[in-house]
Length: 115
Length: 444
Image (cartoon, rainbow over all chains, first blue to last red; front, top):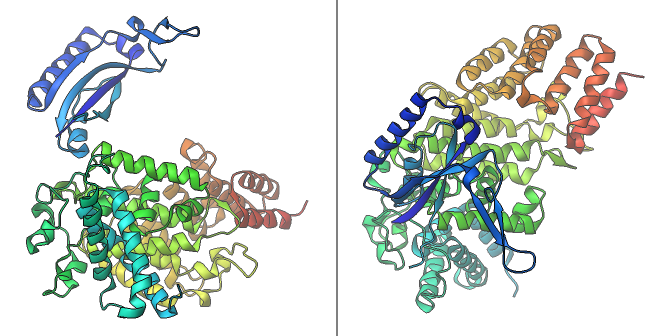
């Protein structure tokens, strides 16, 4: 079995305009997804908006340069993730297709197996 | 080393016919594409040296497979750990662990239980039983579905198909797509890395997913054929090598997936289109339109074979897009002359195709057919309705078709503009020469 990280990307501007009902519905869908795939989900979280992000790169004169904002400015920002376990990419994609997404989509990445 | 011409020819023939079979059977042992390719290349090199003295084996594919697999087992024993840069390919539980030849037993030949009923393995069953080689399972479909996996980019899929299914070298694949060898090598390496690291499985998909996955495979072969048929750039109108390789692939799939009528449809489409190949260019490499082609130069054997396959595909249920495109090609191929073409039937087939596959390019082709069925005015009306489609912005054939209808309607100034626009939109030298000649004929 391999672990895959499902990264959830969403258009934060569109999301900010969602009604409380829409947000409640999305949350409900995530709870249902979590119950349905409980046996393969190894972790997952929702993230605060990209506006809360801090990025750190090597500084020009050694040390670190700390900047406000996400590492890459994109229309769709990383908003959450699930860590799942699957036999192969087909299985992982089948699970990822069921992740509730309203304002974007997901990316599936295999986790490097260091063992 | 001097190689007898008969041996060289036999090895070249086995390379063209058996590469995918030998590689697929070797991947089963190595579960690593690069190592398998290395062993298969080695087996072909040995064949050149050995067949001269031992004679050409009755079944070259089986001989090559045995040699390649033996080599793989040797290499795996010698450095079992050094080669573990990438993880092993994921296969069905029945095949793993796959490092030894333990899966040479008869039971291992079967496709996964779910899929075996839907997939006719004609090549496998054609092999005589009773020898060790007879038990080499036909894994070509696994290789096909791995190369044409929907999580790989289109360009990676077509490159892998040529490299792994047809056995072309990276340099040859690079030439086929007019990119540098370095670029193509990077593209292939990246795709192979994704197959291993993201664990794209080396298996035939379950029955429920087969229609969609077969369609993805057919799309790759069709894309390969289209690239060869109307090369997007370059000096020659067609690239015969690509057209022939895609015909080989379509034939192979037709043998392996006999029950899928769209596979039959695609083979028919390629045959019926390819039948006109020699008539599409004149002695100077200039493009000759369908209306002006010398029909005596069409390949009647390909037309007969393709037409029979279309009828077979049409007889087995609601036709898919490749079958419908093949049916349209068959109407053209069986018309005694351009004037005698049954345009009404062609428009009717495009109508069905539009319902099944509503793409802007199909709509464009339909509009062109309307122009011949009902006159250039009617065709132009339909073409102009498509001009707003963003997908067709920058599509040279739309401008070229408009130009032709405007020319036939005597609207010379507008035709001139449309030809100029079409010229800006193609890089293919033969197509450019044709458009420039038409523009010249319009006069100043």
